[in-house]
Image 1 (cartoon, rainbow, N blue to C red):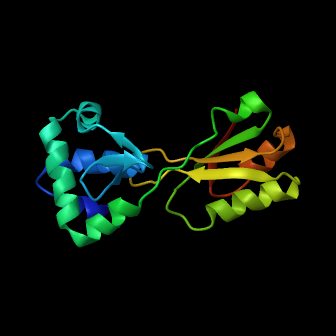
Image 2 (image 1 turned 30 degrees about the vertical axis):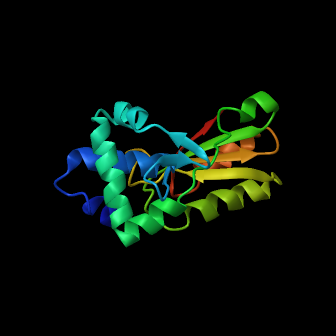
Length: 167
């Protein structure tokens, strides 16, 4: 699906950079062509600065999004989520970061959460990187309790897991 979206900007590398940023951050485009996160408007100049293009490129990108019904439906309905990865250790929650052998494989989340469940830990949040946007995608799992060392050992035995990091 992502390649279909970015494909609509083929031959327009600057606009494709803008689209990638909007998708990565979960930014919406409202009916007026403004880039927003919830009800907070993000100035096109800030978007342009982040991706290294002129503000007019952002303007042209949002105009194109609004003119294409499929893009319009997607970008008016996308939402960002908060990741608690960096905050969790500060408030006594456990953080497990899984690097899979191949993020395209089926069942990685099921295998990992199955092992975690055997240790009677409640999962507060699980977030995975989209392999389309990230060269080295990871799965971050936030648990209610600190991670026992035995859990790390068991997760390392899972066939689809390349590495396990605890924060």
